[in-house]
Length: 202
Image (cartoon, rainbow, N blue to C red):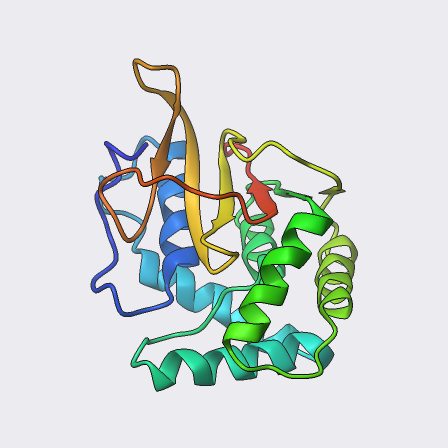
């Protein structure tokens, strides 16, 4: 997948990775698409449109603070929540399911929340709100997952701050091919506790 899909982010100083990673998976599933389609920024914009209509409570508090944190560092856009990405994937007919490890996800979110200066914030409530929205949207959820390299999935890495895509194409070593919106290489990734598994178009 990382070989065929070449539409990398326009610039590194943005938070569009969720859109570009999902665009890479759509490209992988649809052989009729040219290597630069669909455009990742367009996917990101549609994910954010969903996110704006569903933000409330702890999720809104988190995104508002995250957006200020990113913009203070001249980074365009904002974080794409797992619920927003998975709802968009469902709307696209990709039949997503969310696989997560609560303790790992919580560990990473606590670190993120400390980094962005969000005080007196309940991480458990944020995770609960996300999972509740995902389930109420008709998307299956699998708990206590420990495997990061789930084929045909979007994965949270880098402390839960970055989305990458994992395809079903194997390289000679038997490893899965990765698509990272910020790199043409394959740096070592640390699992952040959540994957969105996708199914090819039926």
